[in-house]
Length: 75
Image 1 (tube, rainbow, N blue to C red):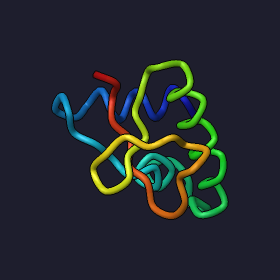
Image 2 (image 1 turned 180 degrees about the vertical axis):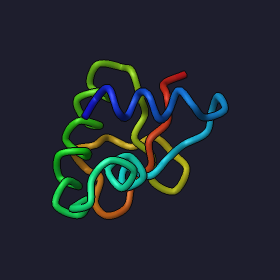
Image 3 (image 1 turned 60 degrees about the vertical axis):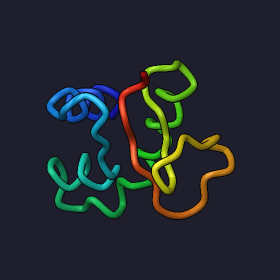
Image 4 (image 1 turned 120 degrees about the vertical axis):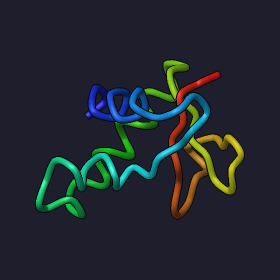
């Protein structure tokens, strides 16, 4: 899942973000069931400093993120 997130972000313009659902919707019919896994993968990538987790356009601590998030490659 981490590779899929990085691949999808790599196709975007620098600084652009994506919704985690875009990653799983493109790959799985049962995408809703995959949402917890893609969020967990995103949080691991954030902990490694590879991506930023955003809410309201601002980086947030994933442990405090509730509701919709977006992902962006780290600066």
